[in-house]
Image (cartoon, rainbow, N blue to C red; front, side):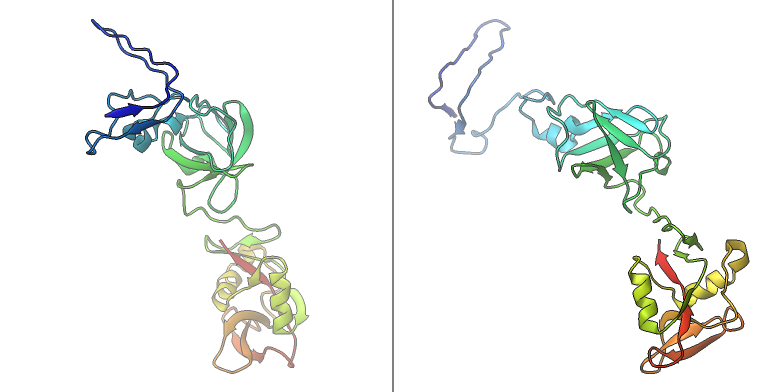
Length: 261
């Protein structure tokens, strides 16, 4: 049973094939004794802005799903969105067949808003096949992809060289310092000292990558050794040459920085 209270107007059409339409500007209070009695039936599967949503439409997300069009600037027409996107707006985009390059979105004409991937870089449309669904959420300035290529690699910071899919390295070394200063210099730029393994891998590709100064002097690495107050150094004569040195109060060493991808 539906109990309607303080309704200013109730219009009911009865007879033949007529359908009833009721406009109510007050809450409907469902007071039936069982769950079966307390329900509203025969709602249409509508996704119009002012429509009541059925559970099926909500579960399917049909009102926020749209096929985008365009290449690097995607047009996203979504009638169910009655205002410009606000922080938290969640959309499900089906990628266009013509998609290419870094992507921005025009949502009902608002924008363009950059599309950002999981490593905070411009989303490249080639990361997914055409027609694939992208779940995106708005932060106020950009849309962030919540799925797609979740293993996107972080690009190398300016001035660094990609050694592999795992890490990037500075092509030239920093001047001599103690271990703590070398660490601080890297950290000040959002980087870290390279590990001993990274040094070896990069050293063996030095000519190919254009790295200089990998051999002929010791460089700090971030690897600890089985000696208190010491760290591993590398690169004196060959790529695999290694030694240990006191992190402070000893001979200063050169260094270079890396970052993971």
